[in-house]
Length: 203
Image (cartoon, rainbow, N blue to C red; front, top):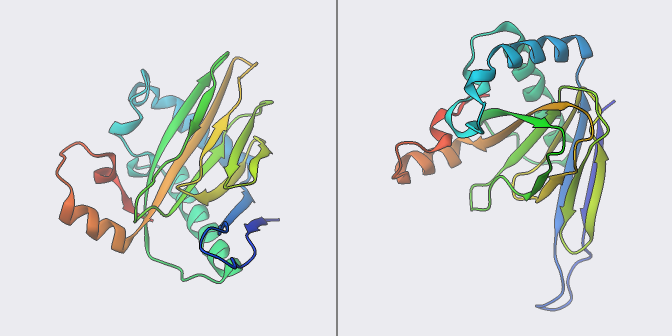
């Protein structure tokens, strides 16, 4: 069953009082599909070795399992929007693989911090004992276990980190969603020929 978590400040009574709202969505994907996606991911490892995450989009791969996964992400994204009562924007998606190896950590970072930042996600493709920790504004860290098949949707601006991997390897699939309006802004203002967002495709 999907799970929704939310953190909201009380209405501020003055200019300096804190004001925030963070919504997160947790869903599960069948282990059969996860295993099939993992095989596709490992078959394409040459695309992301040496930290080349900016130069490809998993969702451009012509593969039925990847298409099935994209449809599940879309359905879960719509469920998330309905749950929190926000408009279901038409969205584009770009995804990449994070092949974490023993001893590696993923330091605190966010996926986007601009006026068109939208929703990001991660899906754990392997079983391991790591956690992903989300830095909720003003409140501190919220810890989630990285269970195989678990998908998390969260605001792209939300900082997060992954602790040190004790096992041999951990594979996860990360992705960003951006609205049609955000893509239009990007196409009209992008001055780079190698921006990862150029690889985004319709969800």
